[in-house]
Length: 318
Image 1 (tube, rainbow, N blue to C red):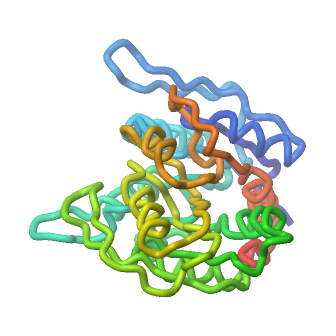
Image 2 (tube, rainbow, N blue to C red; image 1 turned 180 degrees about the vertical axis):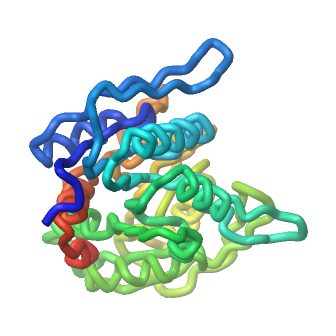
């Protein structure tokens, strides 16, 4: 028994193409909406179809410009709540502010918790997201949170890519904080794991200190949840080649934030290929042949269908 009378998919401006892919997988169309900005910067949301009694899924990545997209999402949730939607699921393929999940020094805010409060207060009944930077953010919400993993997509991709070269493939965590994530990925791939131990001098800059594990002669897969400026990832790739003696370095991450000069850094790095999912659209004006995208739309579509039908989604994590 479905929760609402029918399913409605609403897309914000952050990643409309991704929402369209989800709809194609579900065999339905996007709900007609209009999300505009007034001359003074205020956001206006109009729903051109009824959502009364419907199970509504609002798809919006809170990527750059993050504050605009976050506000869009909150207003869309409020609009659906006031239009008597039966249930509202906020689908956030990329959850911005996730790196501000704790106090790292005195008088720091915990912005991820603030964003969770805003989403709940706006009227959202549940959240569907993918690869939160910190898994404990799920506990910041007082509503159900489903945190999907992109690892199965990458496992399938690399299993086919290295089908005849599987013996010399190794997974590497680019920093200590990503060890648990990389270990789970390595277990799925049935490969060994090495770790980059680095010291971060200041934000978005790091110095590689040591490689824990032997990577000599190996084809490396650097695995992380996101790539922001690309500095840490490119430094790790350089160290794996020059210090560790790795044969080749590939990299993958769920979210391609790619801020500042990230694309240029990747192009000049020893990374042979960098793979993302399409949770964040590519806005870069600089083309890079090394960067490739896999779509996560079928995985989200399956999760949305299961939520609508009140079915378990635990199988999607396997």
